Length: 120
Image (cartoon, rainbow, N blue to C red):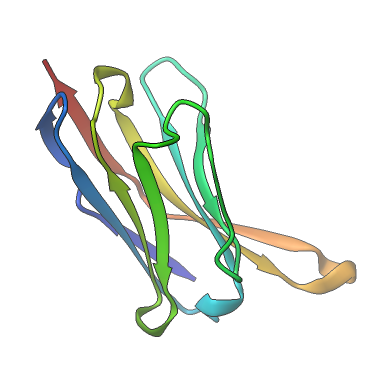
């Protein structure tokens, strides 16, 4: 399984970015997907999650500003980030969860990360 993030960069506070995560080597439509982020000196945290059926949930810190979505035909997940704040600065990681049933359980895959830097 390969996950490749793109779309990160430098943006001013209040601006927008759209992250993409292209998946290969997996049956994308069956996977729950998520975006995580890790700021310097902090633990990796969940930003947004989307199930295989399209149900979503968000960290309180990004609710109303970020939108997670997926395009199963393109095997790609997105994160639309609006009204960016300085505290959104972090490396953003794509996560895919393959469910292999009760005997094997779930297997997590991670992308290499993409840097998002919000400046004042």
